[in-house]
Image 1 (cartoon, rainbow, N blue to C red):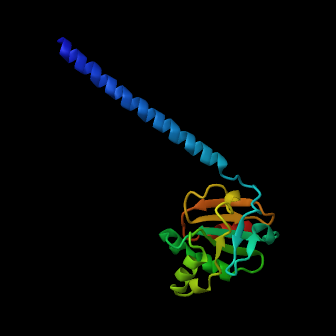
Image 2 (cartoon, rainbow, N blue to C red):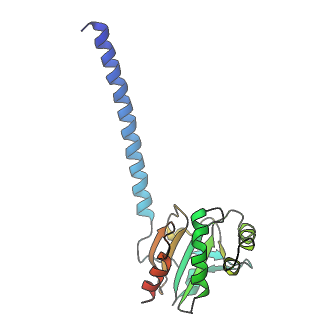
Image 3 (spheres, rainbow, N blue to C red):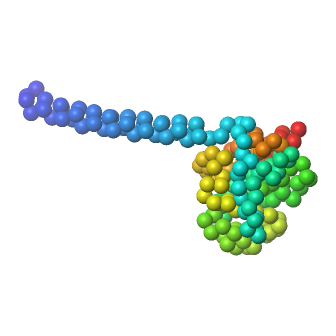
Length: 183
C-alpha cells in the first residue's frame, strides 16, 4: 500500500473512533438520567399524604384527608388520547365508590378547570358526572415522584402510603388493583 492509502485508512479509523466515543458518552449520560429518575420514583410504602389538588370551587385538598380509605388517583390531561380512553373506567369506579375508597382524577392541564370544564361538558355521560380535580400547583404532585407519562394511576392505601403506580392505560387494571387493595 502506498502512503496516501495508509493515511486515508488512519483518517477513517480516527473518524469512527470519534463517533464511537461520542456515542458511548451519550449512552452513559442517558443511562445516568434513567438511574436518577428511577431512584427518584417513590417506593411502595412511601408517604404521599402531602399530595395537593383543587376541587371545582378552588378549595385545596390533600390526600391526608382520605386517611382510612383506599384512594385511586388518576393523573390525566384533556389532550391525552390514552387518558380519554381511561376516563370512562375512572368515572365508573368513582360512581361506584362505597365509602371504603375514593377516586380522584387529577388533571395536569395548563388551563386548569377552564380546560377540564370545556372538555367534560362536551362529553357524553358518564363523563359529565365525573368529579374532576386539578393539581394545586406545579409541585403539588411531587410526593408521587416523576410523572413521566399520562395517564399515571396511583393506588394509595388506607394509611396514606403508595401501594402501586403505573403509567399508561390498561383496560381493567385500575379496578383490579383497587379490588386487591381493598382486601
